Image (cartoon, rainbow, N blue to C red; front, side, top):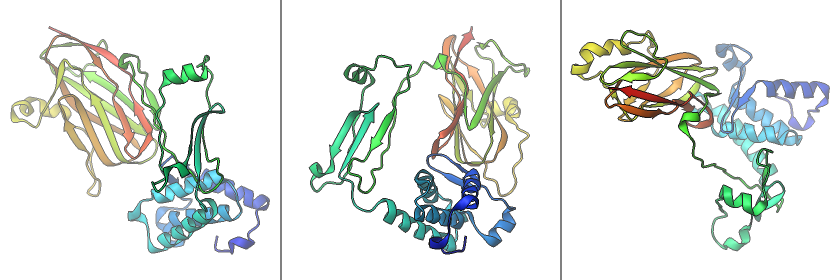
Length: 337
């Protein structure tokens, strides 16, 4: 990739090379990772991921190829790990960013529009803002959308489009969805993180019917499986309202119960240990780095009042990549007198 980008022609070999590069990329909406083809120690001698991605971005911009891939590369470079970067990386990234700006962001957008199945939901002219910053926003209620746009068949997928009618510069957007759920009907989901939850009695027998005795202690085991390392991981397991988490760091509880939470997991000197919070309503674990593989976490719970209670899903996600997440199913717990 050290050749003059102006003189590099595509051809069949070039197409295969681009495809090979694209196959080595793994990305979400906020992060991009380039899989090295050489061992880490050797790869750093010849090139680094930052400079490699930068050169690829410059080439694709110059040849006006794969603009969607270019955008993902640029976003990934913006979210790069600075601790693994170098002055050479930063210089290459700066050049790629300037090329991206000159090619895609020249000029200023004068309008923005949002369409649902080709019908305008929202259209705005930035000139109407006067001297204000060109930021606009709108909220849409589901029921009003159904009435206004005659969305009779909701089983058919709808197309939501974000447009720049002015064809100048670029319009950036952020879309969120607010919704409410029935926790008892939630199904397990794996979007990069697999999570399972199991409850054991004091004899370490699984409790399958979720009928718990008030005053007894139960061990909750959370197991997470990830296929790739995750930076800034959070795991949250809400407890039923009829129960409490037993804090085994107290001497009164720890003398007899602390051994239940002991895990066979060992940490090397350079690994950061997870931070665990035993809150009144949930067990919360945060970790700055979660390696790929299987991880288990244990805590002790005790029902304190009789009755039925919702058992919401245990959820885990990458804090800065919310599209990478997982959850268990929801259920109902019965605490017996």
